[in-house]
Length: 372
Ligand SMILES: *Cc1c(COP(=O)(O)O)cnc(C)c1O
Image (tube, rainbow, N blue to C red; front, side):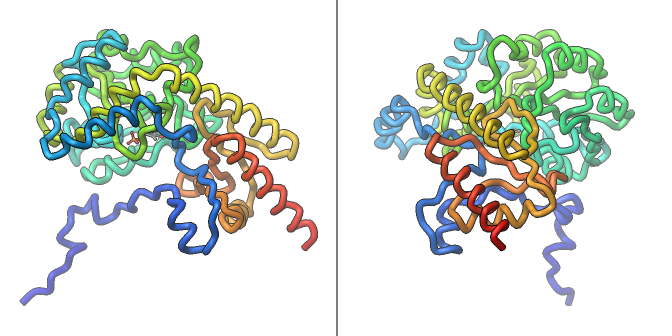
């Protein structure tokens, strides 16, 4: 009789995966370190919380939760289509945009294919690639951002998909509309380009790419967006892809019918209506970003200029130690050693008082180090 060997029976791509490492939840730090009043600046969440329109809509929905959600998300797709001047049949809804990233890989990539992304890019790209058993091709970054020419040069006969994050997480780097469009135009049409715009709303409107309209010009382009960041719904899981209608049709065939639940559908629709909340979120972020860069400049800390709601700061060789000391002082930030940035920590932009807690904790750590 043979022994049951869970690992060797699993698909080779999955056997070698490292699970996604999320930012430490507040409750976990409370439990482990026995402290309270914790500030979490680790997962690029919206520090303003949830729009009041969302709260009201969710309260109303509680009584209908015994019913299955609308499998096609009719009303949310209508709302998105109207807001962004696209067709409802171009939209694929997801349980967070992570879900649509995975759907894309599962729709188009096999274990014979190569998938290109940038060094220091979002960790979900290698994750979904390896899960399928496809070959990840990480292209060396240029000034921490995507080197689009090198990414074009990395294309082979086996390339099937290219992920581009704009702005990128965890570096916050940003590609101009011109650079991006020229890249997309130069990718052969038998390769899908997935443009991940999770931080789109934080980009000033005059420099945003007209990415949804590009989908009509470039049928191999898929754009993903999320309600997790500026819209403040990370806990609910709501994201979507906009693509050529044929791509959307194929993705919808393997999508779990109820992958976006009733509360997520409801909240996303309400969030789309609260333009004031969105504006305020962007404003609070811009102010926090100006303040933290000034803080870094004053202390001689270098950082990667960011277009998102976070900033990745270079603390040097003892960044892991600084991370631990910040935790002990109740400030959770995000180590990015897993992104080949071992000397950096990523700090999400929080409310002014949360940022103050980070500034205070960092200055204390420096002072304590100086006094031995
Ligand atoms: C946060 C983030 C997402 C969004 O994830 P959700 O699954 O929608 O919460 C996608 N891409 C990048 C680059 C991100 O940083």
